[in-house]
Length: 152
Image 1 (spheres, rainbow, N blue to C red):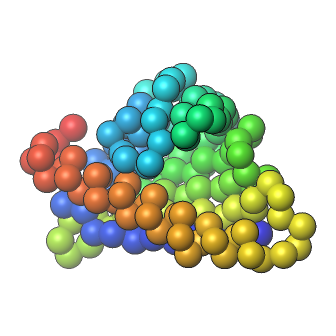
Image 2: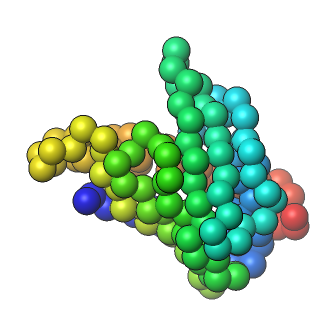
């Protein structure tokens, strides 16, 4: 298993960040280098509730089914990959008070599907793919709250 973590301070409260992140439809606002073709999900997260995404990445269409494993308002959301491109996906979204707003922490435990004990693919994801993807997500989240006056 490999681990990736990204932290950013966002001009919002932990409760506002929680509400934003519990709704998978807000993924459309976050640039991830892919086009989200379809989102099938409830607007609020509940433990055991699943959500599904269809994503186009280049010529590929990827299906992703996730499940909310833990929901602890307003500080924690944990989703796991049920059927996704990863052999393991556990994604914690943490929201904590910070001096200038709220600290947003994304912590991902993952294993690539072709992982056979070698760390090279995990290293590539940790050092190149995830930093770009989560930097863009955190920047978009910051812009969303800056543009909305921190109100949902």
